Image (cartoon, rainbow, N blue to C red; front, side, top):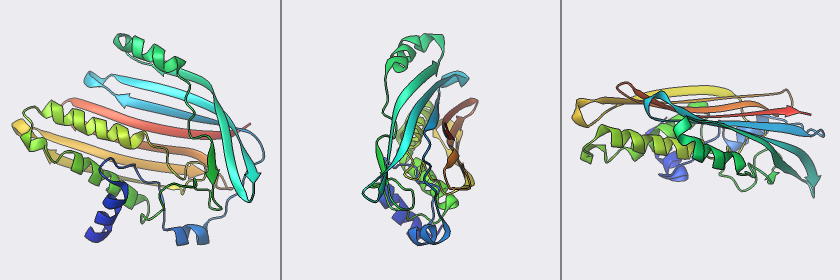
Length: 240
């Protein structure tokens, strides 16, 4: 990605940046894509995994039943949560119990434009899957600018993991009709105490012949020595 394009992407998404959609410029999207709005209800499933210390993880899986509706020339998507499971270490059971009882609205309700993007989301100004990864990498780099001032490399890892969680936890604006493709990148960073840290970003999306979401996954892995933490979000949609 050219430097000026990269700066533009970072300005667009900010330091708290949301991981961009696997997208193409709007003109390319409109010219090369046609979508088909299903009339049948669907089941939307989201797996959200947060890496913890010493290889542990917290996995939250939610499902929503939903449907598409045509209203005044636009498509409205509604749904409600029907299940939630939480897998967590025993020490986190109190947190897991609260999460199981919490009802999440998910991405509902949402309005979609003619290209299947959520109305009100950021425009697709990235240059493709590789650009989306580069934007996420840029956000992670920004979050670590103060690493040299930290006394403990572990503090840096916690900050990096927190930023990764912020990125992963944001609903992709093209969730229901994603631009398909995959991309990945990784970086190494020098850390206090002579350690070397590494983070990687991976994106992958697939869709049916009508453009409807089949599978959308975003993964950010951070590593310092033997301490590896994964933030992963996977969406799947199936028609009832």
